[in-house]
Length: 353
Image 1 (cartoon, rainbow, N blue to C red):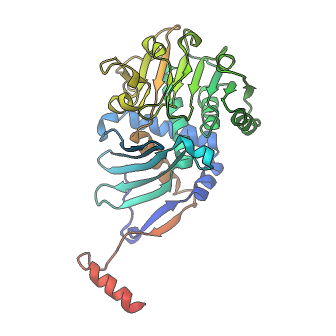
Image 2 (cartoon, rainbow, N blue to C red):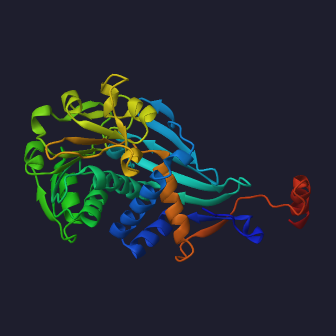
């Protein structure tokens, strides 16, 4: 990936604001943007071994977590700053907010600064469908969506666009969240069913997506609720002390993860022994490990989000800027005439003022 700007442009960094991001995504179309990002993610997972990998750097508090998620492929460096504060919703704030940076490794200069609250929702949905391409039952038409908060509609549109899902069964402990999601999806072409409890939601579903916000050891699904042959897309557990599935479900599922050192800390598998076998998703994508192998197999994607997915999303937005003029140029790189004379630049600015 060659992202080196022309020398005359080095002092200015493209900045994609929330307003710019919404214009970009609405121009492309949310479903198509998710599908495109999914292709970027799958492409980067196919070269997984070329990336630097580390569990995200997290600062935990009783209220939530603030994290940095860095990676590099040797040519380009990217990171995301993201928070997760489940109690924010009750106080009128977003549960998750984020921004990201993409930089040129050869000189260290940033080449993109962007909001990532909206973009993270897109890339989370994109990652889910990348996994489901390889793990979900072929021809699946019905998905249960348990947890109808900010991520819900993105997941529904992603599975409709990429996998051909036709029916989405919604459940949330807060019925107003379900009403919100049903309204937002009313023109999508999906058959939407609002359900009174999780049992009703998963009835007949080949894919079950769990995406709840509470930071606790929760049991959204019990073992008796999950039948043979389903794919579970577990995306709500993303920090220590937060899970959604009963341990017995994990024991009889084939578990697929992004990056085990991170998932064992933050994912559903924090409930299991350190040596419990899991398969890395990139291995399935590259054909070096099996995904779904039988009709009755229960597959579980224990997704906590990983930096390479954010890198892919940043790369996608950077590539779009050539065609879509929705960004601002930030003067955020000092650019003295003589690289050794930073003070001289400051002094000349004082005189000019």
